[in-house]
Length: 181
Image 1 (cartoon, rainbow, N blue to C red):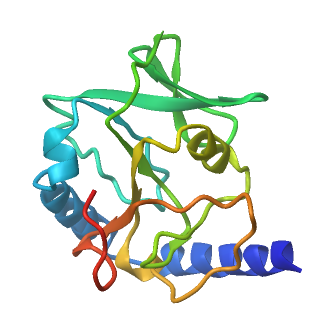
Image 2: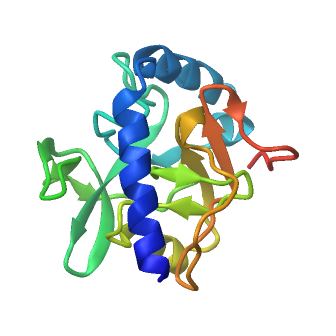
């Protein structure tokens, strides 16, 4: 039952994102706000993601300056993060490092999703890669990254679904009383 609800919501959110015409402006605004958050300023090592066309471009043309950035490479065992290497399109359509070195532990991980609640619940794309990684690294500060149109009041939740510490959109932190990691 929950799997069906999640799939219906994924389909709906993908349609919402396909119709969203303000991605470039919203991404620029998100980048501007993100760079001044305490979590970003204090972090030395940031685990991020190469955004799909429907996701916020938190990197931008200037790239990531002054931080060591690592990106995920999923495999049959889960997901690991790497620095360096050539970025190639992975089997799930996202950019991922080919080669490179295993990343040092992160100070902050930016987490993509199709939908988020203000309390940090997240609906991913269904592979479970981030949920498994986050469950194995509960001490890492997590920041969900999305557009405001991806914020929802509630999500169908299963026991293996891991919440993020806070959600960040083009308007800044989302949700009343949202934590600021």
